[in-house]
Image (tube, rainbow, N blue to C red; front, side, top):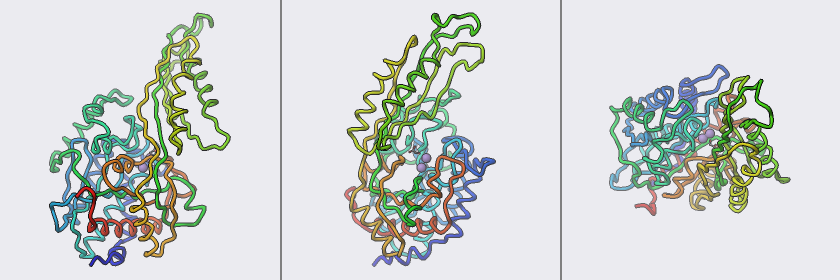
Length: 421
Ligand code: GLV
Ligand code: MN
Ligand code: MN
C-alpha cells in the first residue's frame, strides 16, 4: 500500500531552497531578479544544471523537438503513460526567482523524496520544463506545452521571430544542438496527468494567512499585436495636416481601447505591455508603431465581447494612419477537474497545511495539458502578490509545504488509473 505521508517526510526544505537560489544565478539581475528569456544561453545553462541534479538522483533526461525537457523517475510498469510534474525555466526580462522555477525545483524535490522513500509507483513520474511559457521573447507564450498537446504545430511556431529578428526555429535548433547529448523524445506522447506547483502571483493566500492554494481554473485570455503604419517625415518641415504620424494615431487608439475596456467592477485585465516606435529618433515623425494587447477575464462572454470589439475600436481611432490588428492567442476560461482539486485539498488537509480553492488569474502551461490529461495546480503564497517583477519573493517554509503536497499527490497519481491508460 502507498504510504503518502511517508513521502512528504522525505522532502528536504533546505535542499529545495538551495537549488532555487542556485537556479536563480542563471540570468541573475543586479536587483535580485532573473532575466532568463526562452531559448537563451542563460536558459541552456539552467537546464544543464537541472539535468546534472537529475543525474545525481538517477533521473533519465530526454528532450523533445520543441525542447521541452523531461527527467524521468522510472516506475514498475513501463507500459503505462507517465505522470508529468513541473513548470518552466524561462522568465520575463525583469522577472523574479520563482515564477516557473519554483514548480520545476519543487518537482525535482518531489522526485528525490519519492525515490528516497523507497515507495513503489506503477507509472513513471517525469519532471518537465516546458519551452517558452512566458512569451516575452517569442509571442505567444506556452509554446512548448501548446506544441506538445497539439494546440499548435511546430512548423507554425518555428518562423515566429523575436525583436532581434531571430526565429523560434533558429533558437530552437541552437539549443537542441547544445543538448545533442541528451536522448531525443517524440513530440506529444500520452501523459497520465500533469501537476504544476507555482507561486500564486496574487495576494489571496497571504491575506488569508493560508499556505496552499488549490487552483480551480484559469481565466480567459486573448492577445493581439497591433501595427500602426504611418509615414516618416521631417520634424521641422512637415505640416500637421500632411503628417501620417504613427505615434499620434497609436496614442488615440490606446486611449480609445483603455476607455472601452474600463469596467466599474475592476475585473477586466487589459494591458499594453509592449510598445515600439520606429524609427524612434527625436527629429523624425514616427512612421510605425507596434504594440501588444493582453486582455483577460474569468467570464467567457466578456472575453469574447471585449476581444471582438478591438479591431473596430482601432479602426475608428486610427486617424491618418493605417492599422492592422492580428490576434495571437484566444484561450477561453477553464476549470480543472474536481477529482484533481479534491486530491490536492485532501493531501493538504492530511499534511495539516491550511488551504483553500482559488482561481488563477495568471496563465500557465497547465491550461494546455488540461486539454489532454487530468491536470491540477498547487499554489503557494507570494510576498505581497508581487510577480513579473525582480522583487518577487516567497518563504522557504511555504516552498517546502508546496513540494510536500506535490510529492504526495504525485505518488498517489502515479499509482492511480488514468483515463489515458
Ligand atoms: C504568464 O506568465 C502569464 O502571463 O499569465
Ligand atoms: Mn509561470
Ligand atoms: Mn510568468
